[in-house]
Image (tube, rainbow, N blue to C red; front, side, top):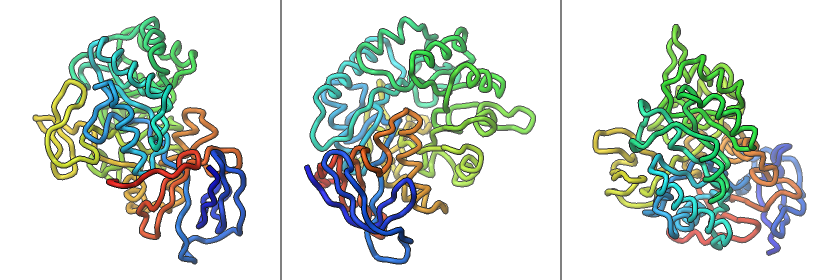
Length: 370
């Protein structure tokens, strides 16, 4: 579908006041270099890329069936044009059922829904001592099981606790298979983190959350990330991580990128929802287990962008952290940027940073009920 989208366009080389022409992919961008603060034009930025999505619209990825379609459609209304469907720690049959549903959704994408790039397998290869909101089904991993799961739906990212027996060698094998490995839900030390990075791990799952903290004599997994990581994900809902901690990570990790860790409660009223096999409660903008533990979020990527700007980032930097860096991390050169030949995944924001329109491969999304 041919489209011409006008405004302040964020290109890899900076802002251009002009027009973006597309037909599935971006054909050309024309205009003049501009300071977007000096005119009243809309902001035209890349569609958001979210690598940690458990749910939305009352549905959880682990429920299978049409849950991936419902989740992807809800997030598209908030500017997410590509995502990873994210699993929970669960018995093997539950994970397989969820992956089968994701695989089916990828083969027959729902119009107007975010593109599902594959799966973020957040469990079960985590430390039972750092479950966070994950159910108690953690176990040690085998490469044979990883490859079997990959046959049900493409695994793009796997969270691993590297201190568990045999997991360092597994990290190396998974990375060699072309699947990204992130360190998370871990009691591991700074040294465990450095060793995992040396074995092929490439990032950290929800930095600061569900990992050993930074202490000046025991730097922990947070210290390993701040000292060595090029990429890490963070949840900028301002509940999971204090703005000051986000700012520290921004100074230390060049390609820190944002995820929502969103749950079935996203876009829904307060009440009870499922997160894997657990009931969680949404209240006052947060999602928690009965004991008060944070259990994912209700964050959407458009709000993540506004939160970043609110703590002091300029819009161009904030945009890269909700789109480009996550795409780069997965090696997806055709998304997360507005450039000739890239997919025409576009978000148009008003001057108040509220979404005015979303395009996925040049096709406008229906934003009703967003």
